[in-house]
Length: 215
Image 1 (cartoon, rainbow, N blue to C red):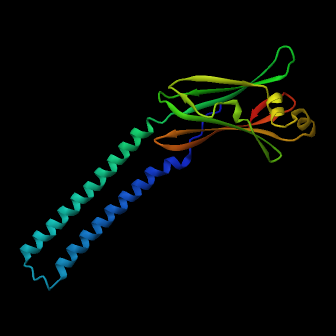
Image 2 (cartoon, rainbow, N blue to C red):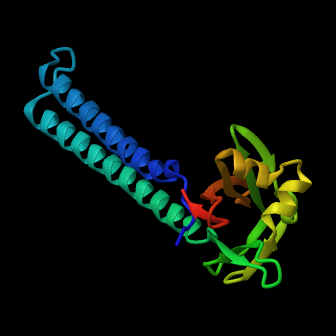
Image 3 (tube, helix red, strand yellow):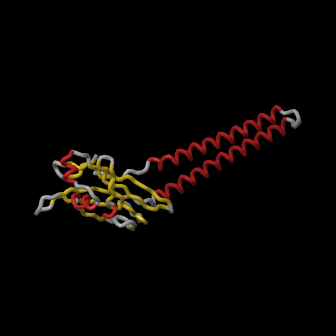
């Protein structure tokens, strides 16, 4: 069963945050070590042993506090990110094939299901058919902007021959020529005022069985 493929770049942000936190911590420790070394070797400061030890202890305590603060901030960012991601909706899309009883012509159903409890705002389902590199949009199958509450299930029925004929494609002729016919489904939605685009699935038309098969 095809399911939505989440953008892989989304998982890279926590890694960058971890690396940044480690880099900051290393920088703080290095600065503290340098300051301690400078106090120990500098003759211009003219510190006695007691003052030198007190200064090094103060630097070490400051470094420890800064490192702790860095990881506290990191933990906060991770918690905040997890909270935001928990509110992200996700769509499960499945294309089903059937046939008319009277004519035995193919009929396709696009089933789409919000599998979370979160609401979609400005959801747009993009359907595109590609034949020999030429793209044809079937976006008219869906409203340009939809709202879907959590666990909402819907379906859209369409006849491949008729819909492709409406956009200037003679599907039987393409079948007889043996041309590859591909159907690609993507969806877009607004999440925290940003547009997110998710590729759902790609299908290829089987001219013999008159049905869409997963690529």
